[in-house]
Amino acid sequence: MSESSQSEIITAETTARKAPRVSKAERSESGVVMIQVESGQVAGIDSAFGTTSSDFQSYAQLQLLNILRAGQSGDDFTLDLNAALAMLSAIDPQDEMEAMLAAQMVATHHLCMRQMNKHAY
Image (cartoon, rainbow, N blue to C red; front, side, top):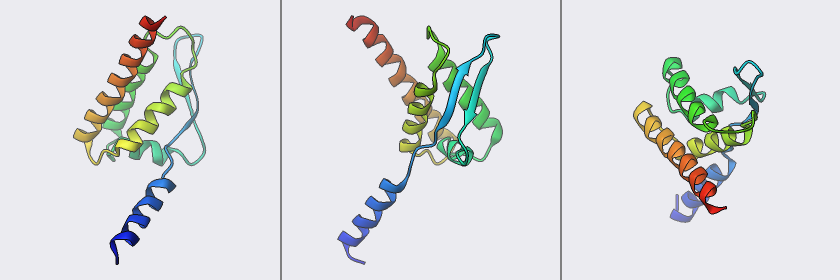
């Protein structure tokens, strides 16, 4: 296979990959976080964390959610969670160690952008 053919295949695979999404992520009146996952997205969300360990997935998702919703005035953080999932999916961690670093990258980006936005106005 030629180098250009391999490049076209890699480009097609990268373009075809879509980030997992949730349809709703919000805090209820009682303070409980409710997440509605779009049909067929559970496997994509699980793979975004680079592991088959349900304990690790739950732990990493909870930690990331705590960062995403910290200090928000509103109760809806669907956009924030979907953006975080897209970033994790793009980083494509292959194991728990890579997933921890990927989650730190996403959380750091989120917090830095929030702080810069706060001081921009």
